[in-house]
Image (tube, rainbow, N blue to C red; front, top):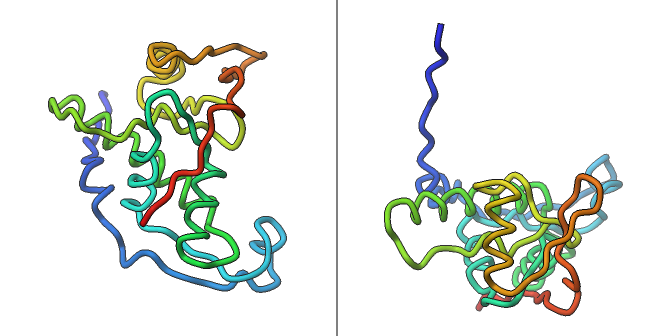
Length: 163
């Protein structure tokens, strides 16, 4: 029996703010041990997308740089890395959906790397599609074991800023 695939509307997911941003205090539990203590922000999906759109051609950013931009904007001690990662993934899929609809001005998700110089294999098209986009912009992608990394990424990364 064939499994019916459910079509996800990524643009709708991106635009659903769920009353975000929200603020919290990490307390003394597991969350604080893993991510730090203090006040944190859970950003809205569109905030993460807006940061990703600020990365110009030839430059890169990382999830950690997005986190830094978010906690600076919201004047908190840190931003939630879990939701920021999820929202970057949603923004990437929404951008891919928009591109397939013929829209030109989409979020350049391929310029947002994981915490280090690693390409995010969960973004639309996987490693090969992202590698192709990065190399078309002049970046060099190298393979180390199972990971695909952008060479000299430290020289090309920026912390995008929101107003």
